[in-house]
Each structure stands twice: as C-alpha cells, then as structure tokens.
Image (cartoon, rainbow, N blue to C red):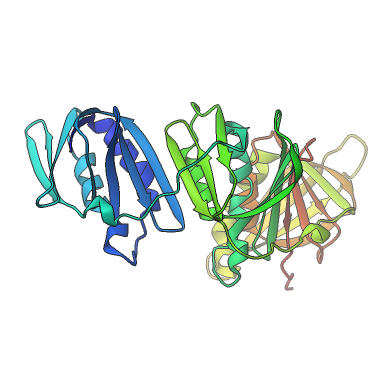
Length: 378
C-alpha cells in the first residue's frame, strides 16, 4: 500500500471512526483502525463488534493495500503533524506503515487487515430521512435512555416505522422522551419496530453535518443490523434484543396546572438551581403561582438548596393556567430537555406534586418529555 492524503482530512476521518474503538477491547485488533485503499479513496473503519463506523477520504493511491494500525497511537500522531500532505507506505513483511509529512518521518506497527472483523456493508437504503430532522429526533430522545445496563433494553431507543410516521422513544425509568416525524416520500405497509443502542444513534447525530441533506437507512435483513448512510460515512449497529416497554400509559392526558415560559429563562434558572441542588440528589423545587389579577403575569420560582453551601431562588414571569403548584423534580432532567428545545417558549404541565411533569415546546405535539416527580421533604 502506498497512498497520499491531506493531514486535515486524515485527522478528521480518524476522529470520526475512533469513537467506535473499544476502550477495553477483547481482541488486540479491535484497538486498531482499518486503512484500506478503494479506487481514489482511503477507507477508514473501526468497530467494537456492536457498532462499526466507516468513513472515506479523498486520496492519491499509488499502490492498493490494507492494514490496521493502533487507533490511539496513529490518531495522536496524525493530529500532531503539520497541515500538509501525508504519505503512507506499508511494508507487508513487517506490517509497518511509514508515515511521512514534511520533515517528519514515523513508523507505526500494525496488525494484518485479514484479522480485522468484517464490517457490515449497506445495501440499498430502505428509506431516507432529512439529516436535520434525524439529528433533532436523536438529540431529543437520546438523553433519556438509560446509562446503566441493569435493563439493557432501556439503553436503546425504540424506533417505530408506521405508514409515513417515524417515532423515537427513550426511557430510563425516571423520564420518557418521545419524538415523531412524518417522512415525505416514504411509507411502510406494516409497522417495523427496532430498538437501536442509544450510543450508536448518538454517534449518528454527531456525524450528521449540514452537507447531509438526507440520511439513508438500511433496515435489518438476515442479520439484526441497521445501517445509516451519510455523505462519506456509514454507521452500522447491532439491534438490542427484547421488547421495549409500553410507556404510553404514563403520559398524562390531562393537567391541573400548565405553565408557559420562555425556554432560555427557565433553562438559566434551572442551571443556577442545579449548583446548589447537587447536594440533595439534584432535587429542586418548582413553585407556581397563577396571576394575582387580570392583566398580571403568573410566576414560576425554581429553588435549589444545599445545607452546606447555600441556596438559589429564581423567579420568572409565566403564563399560568389552572391551580398553584409546588413540586420537586430532578433538575438535571429538566436541564437535559430544555437544552434540546430550540423553540422560544416551552410548556410545563402537571397534575400535582405526586404526578409526572410534562415538558413540550409550545404549539407542537411532535415532541414530549415526561419526568417523574421527586418527594418533597419539609
């Protein structure tokens, strides 16, 4: 193998695929990234056997070939090279790649590409989703997926394709996030249900760029693998086995109090309260007061307290419908959802201190988050 690439492109490509390299690989080759020539491109691939990422960069290929190199070592080396042409030349006898860039000359020892696992190759996309919509759908659900493996199915995002509607749903037992979107030009005769690992979808959202007007998705065939096709990058992921719980019943259908408030105002108040709520398992209180009279605003006060470090109270004008309310929520959960709502105003609904809180953008019904309450101690 003899190939030349630009340092900037190589560093970017390694940054993309490096996220699929396992920090504690079961096989030495899984700590490596695959480099393989393909016509006038260099293919970079990495896998942890559950998720694989492949990206392509433009290259001048003088001699075809393939090799795997230690991802961490090679990435650190490339990121510290000068921004110019990088020449890579493989010595097949020693499985060593000579790396030349300007006055820099390095040799990196690798492992034969024949030992690298087969990375799933995508067939024809079953359907396509606008990149911006898919990125929003993932970002507006992935934060609610479970981080622990106590219930592995909850570490995934339930994805349903029904007619021309795509739904993503995530829950960790304390909160639920649901996002729907209508797919123009795509329709499914019968519903398809997938549970995709949240980590894999987070990488898809991270990789989607403004250039990705559409993302193609190849659905599972003989193997339980879903593949996302972006402009120069493919992400494949094993699916999670099991049935995702039906959380639809916990979404309240009515409310006794509804607060409409500017998203950025509430987010800032929550972030200030979090500073002090950390000492009490991130429990913060919300006090809602309806308007005192016609033409006057209602208000919501967010309170975070620490017995050792002090407290913070932030009062915000709000449009309040219904009764006064005092409730406690995990303030981090509120921050997580407010961070992914770009809309100017947000609605918070509740049926009382012992009931879940519902957060959604004002005037939209395609995104909803349910947060379980925390107990209020006097």
